[in-house]
Image (cartoon, rainbow, N blue to C red; front, top):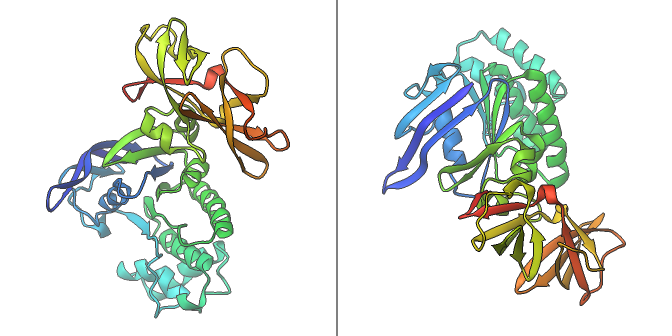
Length: 352
C-alpha cells in the first residue's frame, strides 16, 4: 500500500505543485492519476519514487516511511514516458540493469532477463539494441525491466503516449492484463481519460496541485464530485447548464425539468444552481416531451456508430448523443429527455 500524508511540494519561486495531498493506493491496485498538463500528477509520481523531494508531508510504502529514503531504497520501479532505455545495451542488458546495480551475479541476471523477456514475447529480440526495436517493443523492454526488479510497486509516467492509436489500444489491454497477473500495486499517470477509465481500479482527478475526486471510473464518470471533474471527464463533456430552483422543478435553458432524485429535499426555492447531465444520458425526441430540454438543432457530428447533436436553447448549448440513422436536420426543433437517475445538481461548483 502507498500512503501520502499531507504531501506538499513547493518549487523555488513559491510555485506549489502539490498542496497537502492525502491519498491511499491499496495493495495490488491499479491506480490512475489523471488531469490536465501542469496539474501536478507527474510531480506526485516522481515524489513517490524519490526523484523529487517533498517539501513537507510523508510518503509511506508498504508501511515504511520512505520520505527521506533515496530512490534506490524505496523498492519501487518506474517506467518513464520515453522508456529511458540504454541505446548501447542490448535487450538482455537493459532488462537486467537494475539487478546489475544490486550486484546480482551476471549469470543470474541473464537468466532473470530471459525469463521475463519470454513472458513478454521478447525472446527473439534479446540481442537487439533499442534503436532496432519498434515503439511497442521498446515499451515491453521497459516493462520487462521493472518486472525483473520484483519491486513492491510499479510507477508509470504516461508510458503509452509515444505509441500510435492502434498500438496504444493494444498496449493498454496488455498492460492491464499483466498487472492483474502480477498483482503488483501500480500507479499510472496519464492525461488521457480513456486510458484511465479503461484501465484503473480507482483513479484520482487532479487540478492545480489538488485532488478533486477519488473513485472508481464508474463513480467519477457517473457522479462527478464538482463541475471541474464533470467538465473534464468524458469524451463529450457533460452539459452544465445554469438554472434556478422552482419548487420541485428546475428552470434550465428555457425549459422546466424535474429535480433529480439525488437532490430532492436538498434545494431551496429560488436558489441558483448548475444542472448537469451527460449527452449519453439524454434521449432525443422530435416531439415535445414533459421535462425535456428543448432547442434548435444547430450542429450534428458523426461519432461513427452515433451522432452528437447540439441544440441551442435560450442561449445555452445542449448536446445529446443520437443513434446512427436517426439524427435530425439542422434547424429542427428538438427535445432532449434526461434520465432522472443520471441528472445531477451542483451548488457553488460542488455536487449536491
